[in-house]
Amino acid sequence: MKRAFRGRIMTASSGGEGLRYLDDGILVLGEDGRIEAVEPWTGPPNGVLVRDVRPWLLVPGFVDAHLHYPQTRVIGSATGPLLPWLERTVFPEEARFLDERHASAVAAELTQRLAAAGTTTAVLYSSSNPTATRVLFEALARSGHRAFAGLTLMDQHCPDPLRVDADHALAACAELVRAYHGHDRGRLSFVITPRFAPTCSRALLEGAGRLAQDHGLFVQTHVAENPDECRAALAVHPFAKDYLDIYDRTGLLGERTLLAHAIHLSPDEWDRIRDRGARIAHCADSNFFLGSGRMRLADARARAIPVALGTDVAAGRTFDVRRMMSSTYDNAMCLGDPITPEDLFRLGTLGGAEALGIARETGSLEAGKDADFCVIELAAYVQEPNDVLARIVFSSDTTPVRETYVRGKRVVGG
Ligand code: GUN
Ligand code: ZN
Image (tube, rainbow, N blue to C red; front, top):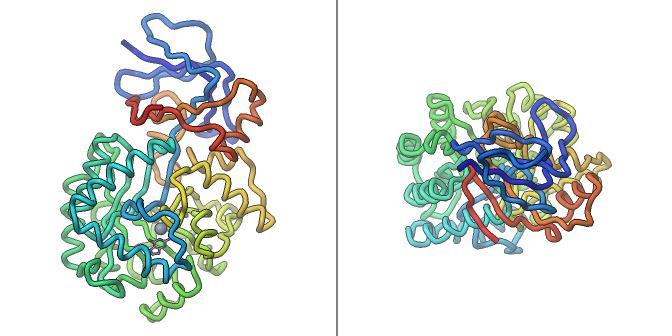
């Protein structure tokens, strides 16, 4: 029997600026896991099993555009800034992913945490280990999340257990593409993932660029997160005129490139990001935790560069994309360029999907899209749409996610 949810509904919509809010609405699920209708409640439809969740709220599942699967267990390790934190906290933990049992246990934890936060789409860095990356894809296929995930590429300036030479790493990527890219009716994608310029040789970057082009894959990497990192990147790649140029000259900068952080960039680099059509993953909480600096969101928005939000676990301290909306607000306020709660909600849902090129499939509650959504607990006394929005964006601990659905299937219960 067809199913539907009755409740309050809030969503961004394709082609519309503001948000749509229904005080009493119905979300009808089709039998194929897609959304059949989102309408004001007018009475029970025939032949549909309706679940009434009022006064709770239905929203689209959140889009986390940047996080690290092998860092799931090291959240809150205060050994920053970036380069010492990588040495002291991240690299030793990522080396543990040579052990398949550890990889499996953490992959299960990760998918649970995503669901508990209401995240239905995630863009993930794996470790540099191909087996751990398979384990990750298998866990995502089981949970049903929409995900982009990639083998983290590094062939220099990192500890031996994490180093994989360019030929081996790129061959492993090609195998993972064959095994998982486009699987689960297109919900799983392989993403080419050079960790960042300092840990990648020029040959590895160029090979990664070719592979991305040959298969039409997304590329993700870190750029200009920290001043010491920027200096290290240019010391390792003296052929480049600036940090962005390293990725540009090695064929990694294009319309399917997702750049994380983008804090210490010149206006000229920002212009090149726009000209190449690349996208930004904004990781405000991580930037605070590692003291990396403040990303000027206004620089991206002024150029109409697509921006998504990333928790950047484990430099980010939570899997909760709504906490990223909130810290994105703080970051923008401190820079004197405030952003509205409507825009923040959009960035964490449909805006993220747009930046990833998947807005026709997910990111909002609209007929025809996958039924990727969550049910949020909301007190009946919160009634004004602006108050509802404020709770969702700024107060996730008072409005917890109770249920998360990917393509109409429940992935976590409360
Ligand atoms: N730059 C290179 N690797 C990483 C990482 O794992 N996390 C963050 N925040 N920045 C990086
Ligand atoms: Zn990161």
